[in-house]
Image 1 (cartoon, helix red, strand yellow):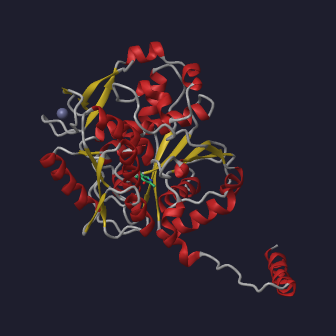
Image 2: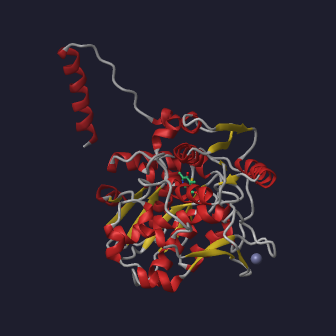
Image 3: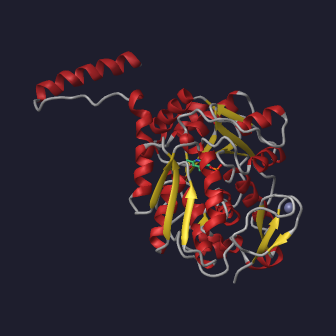
Length: 417
Ligand SMILES: *Cc1c(COP(=O)(O)O)cnc(C)c1O
Ligand SMILES: [Zn+2]
């Protein structure tokens, strides 16, 4: 019961068989999965979806696999958290966090895209699975490859945070730490994929990988009560996620599962790596590559593969873009934790900080509904927080010492009020 029909060039429309292909041999445009839309419309319903287990495969009619899912049985269907304390700080009345920082099993949005790419890799008979990663993707590829018993190679920049390197290493793949930026590594992996016939989740399996990101959009609609919110703010790295949130919204509307105007989709990037935001500001269709310089390593991609699609989606939905400095990201990480108890990484800090700018600029109005996508977990990037945290108070074991300490706390509270 698969409605997946093959691949098609998103630029010139040439169709291709459903293999490990990702660029058009006619025009070099990216290939995208196609479906039998009429059959999907005739067979899916809200009730059918709601009866299924709470994972990303509840939307399987919209995903590019031919047989049964192989992994990701607990991935996706992350909480849509109503964030009233944070909303009050921002002066908003209706704010939600789509919390992929607790995605199963590797704590980022990447568990969605990898569940789909890995399932498809098995269907295509691929034996060696890999990726070019800024950190979270490597964690997810290593974990899903282990579960499926695939050989695995994870390529990362040498400068990643220790916990992200560790997370990739634990499931036992070959971790290759390259002296170069993500963009250099992507080039190397493209050559390796061509030369050895391996499956790289985000390179030659990218057409399948990208489809997994639609599920974040599907979940926003379902969890918001089969409605569209008015705004969605998404981080942008390689540009997979943001356009697929938009595609997910459109496909759900075409399938008759939701109606109304699409949300405005806004892009968030780090000021030190903002090729898409520059393109939006300067009216360009294709972002110019930049050299990244930011603490937000997971979104430090200077030459986004799907930059064109991000720019197009933001413009088509009436969205906008905003950047965040490293200091603004750290402040936003604290604000999120102190208001809602959610600890995100700098990419999440950038997304929240960008949301704050959009509210200040009046792009997002106070009484409009907003969903902010929190895509990664702060426990992996604790090193970036070290300088901005209050150290624990060290005390002895006597009640007397505690009393003195508590008196100081009390004074502090009164001074704050
Ligand atoms: C990969 C990643 C993103 C977005 O990446 P895209 O390539 O634009 O889909 C956002 N946040 C985190 C934490 C990520 O790891
Ligand atoms: Zn083409």
